Image 1: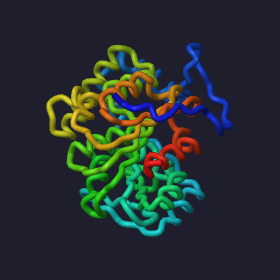
Image 2: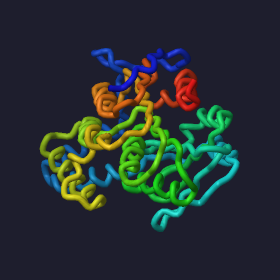
Image 3: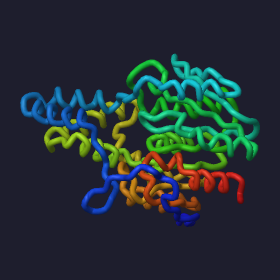
Image 4: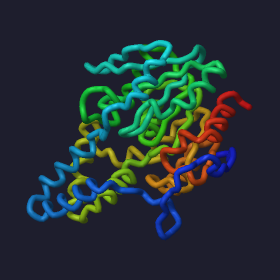
Length: 310
């Protein structure tokens, strides 16, 4: 079982969160998502195959906006950059500091810039920090990618830059990090922020966002299951991506950080991860949600304490 490191509250959050009737943080669904769901539900009564195909394309699509000026300025502050070669694609990896390598893996439609507040403390503690945007993310070309390309980035860093001491990953990036370890990424430890390690639950959350009717949801499930199985060269993808399966052979030192009011992932999922990740420490926060957990100063100090053994 995991060790409870600490429980911290929301000590410096200025944005007032929204809650549903049960008291859980409410997930805000953009209007255009709701409109897409309504349109595809209606279309499914006429052509369910077409509607499912549209959804499967959206599933692999990265939602991003043009990088803001401050984000471009941040990347220019890197001490060195390495162009990572990834099966015909080039990914820029930005590096700070010297010492054992810490690699940051962001989530779907996220960015390496989300980890920026961790850099000063890690560099001061004697680590070398690597940040990057995954394929089709940030300023990288393209609109679609998949889990295997996320995993490929981590493995390529090990092969092209050097040995990786620690992986820190957020959300969907957690699934990539754990799978990469199973595929040969050698790390001493992992720090996972609000990780998502269950593809079936991910699918259900996705379906809930669009409020899909049962007929369309079932066909969509079949369609993306086929596509993901083809990508990974397996017969059935669904049973392979659960906390029990992904963590079965993970024995590295670890820290699991999650928020009790995460609006995207239910707390039961994090409890399952802690149960199957033997020996990991856990840090449960309150009131930070899914993304602000990367910005909280108390969380950052706990991560640095874990990294330095203090």
